[in-house]
View 1 (cartoon, rainbow, N blue to C red):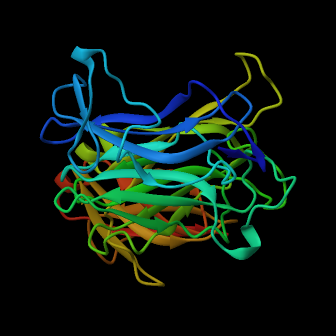
View 2 (view 1 turned 180 degrees about the horizontal axis):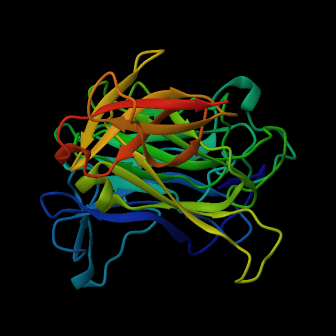
Amino acid sequence: MLATGNIGSSSSRNAYENNFDFGPDGVLHHTWTYREAADAANHDLDYAYSPDNGATWFNNGGTNIADTGLDQSINVNSPGIIFKVLDSRQRLINQQAQCVDNDGRVHVLALHRRAEPEAAWVSGDSVFSVLETAYFHYFRDPVTLTWSQRRIPWTVFPVGSRPKLGYDSHGNIYGIYLSYASTNTDVVPGYANGRLVIATASRASQYTDWQVACSLPNDLNGEPLIDQTRLLADNILSVFIQENSVSTGVVGTPLHVFDFAVNIAPPNADSASLNFLGSDALIAFNAASGHTYQLQAAPTLPSQSWTNIGSPVAGIDGMRALPDPNGRQSGQRFYRVIMDP
């Protein structure tokens, strides 16, 4: 196996899991990559599934490749396990993102080297780096069993940390990661600070419409975590992430949970839209960084008694949605958003 141009071999390999996830029919799905040695790069993206909680395993085409009752295990030579061939010069990082949606569709989000000529391997390249890479989305059709490939646009918000991957009740997909400021720095993913990016693609488009839906200017560090259960139940994407800090101790390292409402009707360029999530009313509008925004409500129009709902929030360059808790049960209400300055 090639590792930064050198030939290496090993008698055993370590499989680095993306995840184990059950589909809606109880089938257990697993994707991973192999590493040849501690100091060699990862290679290939692999897949297998088990209909009996991991007792027996099958490749993508349905061929039995391991029966744990017979002391068999999946190995690097198991047939039909590779769904994306990547040699070890592709800056493929291990332990990336996987989920299985409510239709049984397996999704993988993995960063590795781009295919453009300017991103091709040259002698002296590092094994792991965010240089010349992008986030690639792979998904397996539960009927045809075929794998497809998409890519998140990388030119505005370049690759950074290991990503996370989630899905909503409509089958839309969300990729969450930190984007590092420079595309010219040789940094191993997960070992630098950056800004939080939420990218999304729709099931209706067959995930051809990947776009960055939101990015936060906060200086953050580490790898984000998401609450998949809440995303399905409430249409709220909750992201747990650590703030970048000069302190490395327990005290002085702020932790954050950022909540994003999904499946919200987008506003027109100079207006707002009214949405509902559970008992909350959500007012969505186009915001801009450098401003603060205050949601207000009144029972009638015209009104001299506008009431602040919640506290002022900082703007970002994109859509924001401000909640009125229990607004759906409050009778007739009119809303406006005040911008300052």
